[in-house]
Image 1 (cartoon, rainbow, N blue to C red):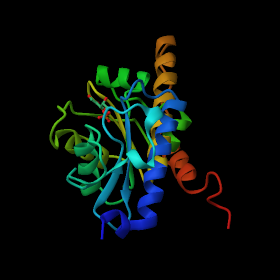
Image 2: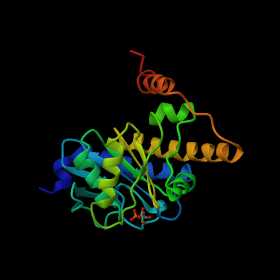
Image 3: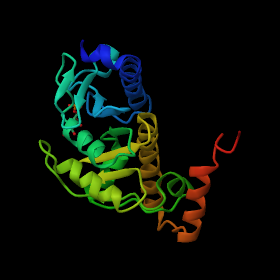
Length: 228
Ligand SMILES: O=C(CO)[C@@H](O)[C@H](O)COP(=O)(O)O
C-alpha cells in the first residue's frame, strides 16, 4: 500500500491547502519569483507537506506538493522539496505545538532583518498578534539545521510567532499553516508601518501591561472565539 493511500483524506486535504496558501503569499505581495514557502505538519504523522523548490507559484497544485519526514527526507512526490525544508522540519521536531511554517523575503520585514533590528512593539496590532517586539534571530547559512535552530531558539524565548532571521528574512509559525500565513502577512504590514513611523520621528512604545492586555484579548476573545 502506498503512503498516499495510507494517509488518505488528511493527506489530500493538506496538499491542497498548502498549495492554495501560496496564493496568499502572492496576493499580499510577500514574495517575488519563487522566493518563499509554506508547509504544514500532517496531524498524527511525523510528516510535513511543503512546496517544491523553484517552481512558479502559478504552477503549484496539490499534485506538485512534496511530503517529507521531519528530517526532510522525501516520502511522496516527484519534485525536489523547498530548499528551506530542513528549517521547517527542525521547527516541527522541536515545537510540537506548531502545525504550519512560512518563510518569505517580504520587503519591509526583510529590511528590518538586514539591519538586525527587532520591530518594536509600538502598535496595538503588534501587541495583538506578536505579544511584544518581533525578535531577530541569528544569521545562519542554508543547508543544515542552523536556520531551524536559530528560529526555534529565538521563538522559544518569547511569544512572537515571527522571527526576523538576520540578513535573510521572516519565518513565521502557527497552530495551522493558515495561522502562519496570517503572521507572515501581519509582520510585513507592521514592518512597513513602523518603518514609516520611525522615519517621521520616534514611535511611542506601548507599556508592558497594555501589551499583555491586548495580547490576551486578541488571542482569546477577538473574532468569533467568544461565541458558543
Ligand atoms: O531563502 C531562500 C534561499 O536563500 C529560499 O526561501 C528561496 O528563495 C525559495 O526557495 P524554494 O522554496 O523555492 O526552494
